[in-house]
Image (cartoon, rainbow, N blue to C red; front, side, top):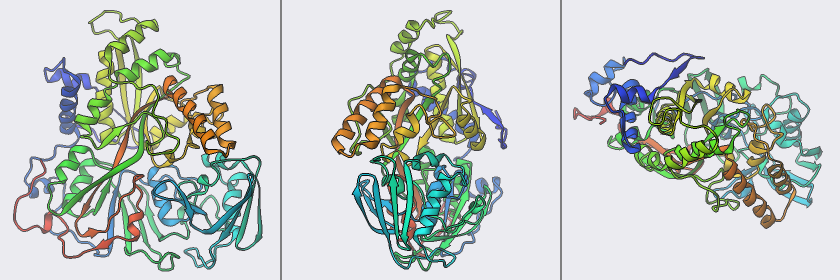
Length: 572
């Protein structure tokens, strides 16, 4: 079977049943299904590793000659371009990671989720609704303009007064007024106590832009961060250069190229060839294992916090029944996917918060793979199997994903396993813009996405589970409604006593795990494949690119395949 190239707005459908039946494998256990689908989908989308190096590379229209490169430029593969380079607006993981190189915030997140100074050298809270920040002196934007309290006020005010339209606005509606008694002092007066306010001012929340930045600011963003914007060729390449005047000292890397490479096979080949230096969390597990054997590449992993989930449309007539949602959860072979597909590059998730978080609740209902229990729940919901072991389903669902290869492969396994309990799944994969637009509009029954970094603070519960936070205001895309959950969220937001907040979040997590607006899948480890010419690369659990500030480049290592000595190397 030949793959048809995907273009913007088009959809690809994967039918795991057809793959199985054409091979003569109509009945397989879950682990075998995962292995088979992995091989079958790889044949469809990545006819890779059996070619000799030169023949294989020529097939894709590139040469085995050494790859021209600037020795002081680091090239990074990303799956998609940033959706908006304005830190008040951009929400995609690519946007957020590039924002953190271009911009600073008043405060920043530490390795253990503590709040540390950033643009503000210190702050104080005279009472529970007042926050006073003193800015570091002498900080300049990339255009040379001195940072002042007016820039901070404008950044937040442009959201609150509607000058900039963004889902982030609701996070800051707790602000009653903003005062700037002098150029270095900014005072926030809140309408009510808000325990997450400081966290929402960190580098994962919002970056500070210059006073006057309008809706076109994303085309040429100007920040105070360690790197300056050079160019963005839409969905092709983002280029940044070191900021020599950065207040913490200039980065060691002079220039960074973020190359947009949507296809995982191509990303792997570019790493192997040496034309890309870094691929972080952008490769299927088999590709990681194959590239691990390349002498010019290194693979490192650290425990991660990024969270993958299945979301269900709570307004859908079928999915509104909790028994149906629980049946789907029991039918998902999470443990086998972690072991056989992900090869333990992920860890099981039981909820939105990572396990090392102070508010994490471990005593929640979980859903190990149990097809018999899934069938029982569907029977109890009145969705009887019409023909027993026959081919007719109990009902059908549409499952939407992006075109990311690992997501599609995992979705194909879930499709097959849901079929085993009588649910026919129509699996549809779209380019990300089309996919995300459907999700925001509520045009889905089931989808899968990841929270990147945003799940490091329990304030996210409000954005994703409060009944008033449906898009475009917030991220409650499944339109979940529960009055008790709303009350717990509002209590924890106002409460300053940490133990009382923890107890509220504990009950909230138990309720959400029972009602299942999200089905938790796993936390992804931060996995980085990079060229050995780079050193001092320190990974973060959230997968950010902070390491670029202190990265060391060593020109003595060969760039890649084209610069190796005649020895044959294969990806198997």
